[in-house]
Image (tube, rainbow, N blue to C red; front, side, top):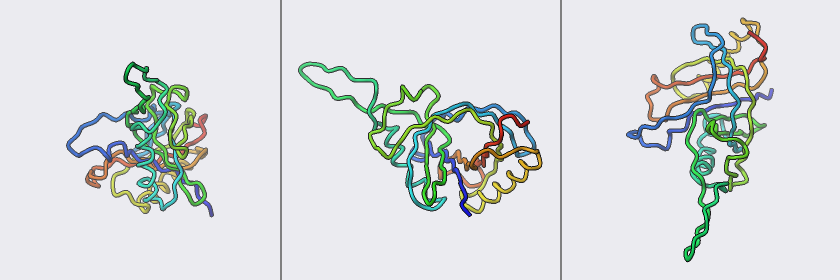
Length: 209
């Protein structure tokens, strides 16, 4: 049985030193309702930079991270051209894009589509085009999401356990699943397992309350 899984990693700080503090923009949403560890959220539209890799659930994020991080670090064709000056000629340099959380990953047959959420200040028209053809940009519309938050290790076992609990809660609420599940991670790997913020996110019908 094929299963579509979208994983989200807040890998935004994984390459930042433990001693460096950095404010990370997160996907914007409003809480429509709350039931203990479960929430019903309305997410705003956002843009993803995405790439496809092979590997297991735990491996895929690491494989794709460097490729996506190169894009936001300047491996792109910036739309803001640098003026030529004489006698020194300057070439346009890649535009740096701020890190955000979370990072998404969706199962595509035996591969994974891994994505970074782009800052809300950008549109598809203003984002610099990736130099790497394996990185693409796409718009995600506004969605209603059922969510469960938990701490613990980044393991498939924990993911599947919490996904099952969230699916049971969705059915108890009379909601209809409308998309693939999401695994959200919001901490760098050096964060102790008991302090980590993890979430499972599942789209549901927007009209359901």
